[in-house]
Length: 202
Image (tube, rainbow, N blue to C red; front, side):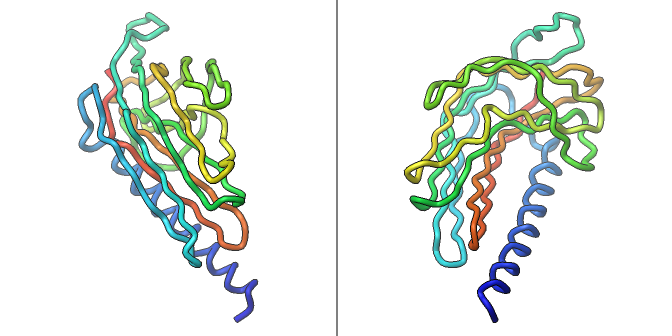
């Protein structure tokens, strides 16, 4: 079988694995939510077909309820903190994306993306700021902590402290969980996803 054929099969297998991981992550969003406070650390190691290694680690994650900036009695908000460290083979075309999946009485269909707000985003700095987003019943949205980050020299770090997520237009139970993903492009495509523990938004 040609190298091109092998690459195509690997990409198809990777796409199937990504779809399965996303389904598992979102389907469990509303179950087993933790109380606000420190959340468990997490780590994941993924190997490519030729032994390429990708690692994801999350440490120091916490979520605490705070008053909504809208001050309308309907919003729910939380301040989140944490550190994500990603490693990939040196010289690889790799990126890190990290944030939170937020759902309102989640009835999983497709994951839609939505974001408004402000963020102090200096490279290698501790990120802070706030996001205010509408989440309707039965909807889930992804809130990125920062722009996609290129993994240079084999490692990338995203660190954030007291980042506020402000949920509006949710008429029921709201919950969230951390989501981090490393993507390595090229012939031997790798995508590795690490989920955090779900927690409720008061």
